[in-house]
Length: 420
Image (cartoon, rainbow, N blue to C red; front, top):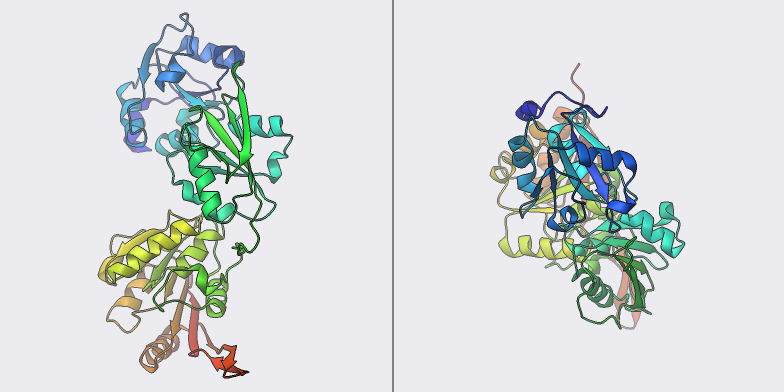
């Protein structure tokens, strides 16, 4: 990146002016490979947490600079400040696995970062437990809401939660218990690899509300309490999975809508007129890298979207309280757009279509005749598919059962063409 060109012209081939990120475990200096030790001995300055810097022996003569808090906004300025010096940065475990190495590569570019990994906390934990790492889902709570665990909860699933500190195990235990997974087996592995390594096991419901050792990993064997509802990652969660006031894209229509939106990892969805946020939330649940912005004019509904997103394990869904099209101006360009409300407002569909990337998908659901008329005009202009969705649900009528229809939906789905 041009903004950090002063860091030097070195690269990941190990040249002196590259920033070398050294993974280090709780075992400290004795656990480092010789290449990692040499990089630290040769450095002019070593960046790291105070705990990590204290693990280095006296013969590492470099200036030791602790990371400030909060870390994220300080990384690039601190590296820039030491431009021209041989700089090493300490990171826990494997720096490229939910770690500092990923952050530095994003900020500085891969040609200016050299990574020397140590076994990750996930690798060490699976080795201790006898779990297959490739079949174990890893959720990081480091600098992120612990509510992300909700998305991974499934009966029989094994999870590893990378802790933010001493309070994380108790927070995970409370979350599991409140979610109907109180019988889940929790194993907290602390100070992995160190002489003082400890392993503590209990169920979520019986976990003591006390601090653990700060450096820990929480292993979870998910056990659902009887009657706990399934929350599958496949689109079409039950309507009662969401807190709502009636402004909700219903389950059957939502599943069809998400199929047309086609969630792709790393892509961004705009959910315009989001209501309860169900489409944005289910988009985000399909993969951890799926991003979503839910735009809602009503303040109470916007707050409700945030609660729904946290409860369903995708707290990173961006909630935008505002009225389209003005509320769309500062958002990143979308790869897909769903308009569930407000299509008749002047400029909304124009703003969505203009912002949409080539190859992006636009889906509009129309319930009223007025919205349907707008959709038909747009279909005449830019093409796409029109689908009529009618759903009936069985419901009691006196002592009998009859079909009760939901309001029919006219769905317009279109892919923005690539320029010739």
